[in-house]
Length: 239
Image 1 (cartoon, rainbow, N blue to C red):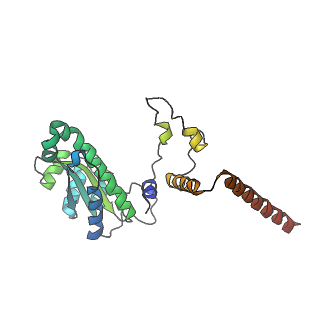
Image 2 (image 1 turned 45 degrees about the vertical axis):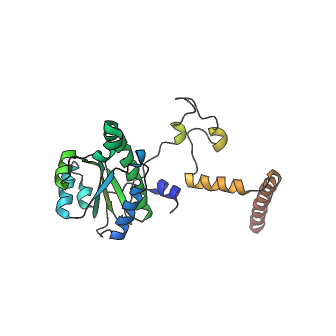
Image 3 (image 1 turned 30 degrees about the horizontal axis):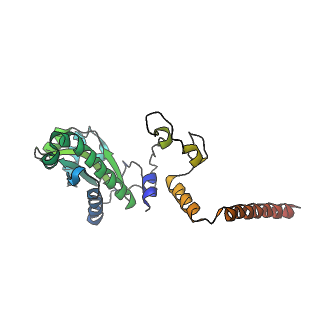
C-alpha cells in the first residue's frame, strides 16, 4: 500500500473479527514501530504483547472500561524505558522526549497494521498504575499507549474522522500569516480540498513529466476536440 494511501484511508477500528492475528503480522507491526525517529536515537520504546483473555479483561477495566480492549484479538501496550532516555537527556528526556518518540512509534504501527489488512485503535485513556500492576512493569517502564488490534469486519461501517485541512492550520514564517503559495498551488478556495494527497502527488508527478508548454497546450486542444466529437456523435445518434 502506498504510504499516502495508507495515511488517508486508515480509520479507527473498534469492532473486530474473532480471528487471531498471526505472529508474522505482529512481528511486522512491531518492526514498523522500531523504524520511528527518536531523540538522540535512544529508541526508548518497549512492547508488551497481550493475547490472554483474562489479561485483556483487566486491561479493559484499566482503560476506563473500554469494551473493545477486551474484545480485540491482540493488545500491544507501547511503553517507554525512562531510565534509558534519562541517561542522555535527564528529566527532559523522561517528561518530553519519551512522549514524542513513542508517539512516532505508535503512528508507524498504526499505518503498518492498516497496510497489512488489520484494524487498530489507539487507546489514550487508561489508569497508568493499574496497567503497570497488571503487566508487572518495573518503575523504569512507563506505559504510553494501548493498541487494540485485529481484523476489521468487512460489513462494518467504520467512521472516518474529518481531517482539518492543512491550509487552515499552517502559517508562513509567523503565526497567522497565510501561506503565499497556497491559492496558486491548488486553484481552490481556502476551505476546499477536492483531491486526496495521493491524487495530488500523482498530479505533480505527471506535470513534471509533461513536455514543454507548447506541447501541454496541444494536449489540451486534443482533449477538447475529443470531447466535442464525442458530443457530436451522441447528437447524431439521437437524430
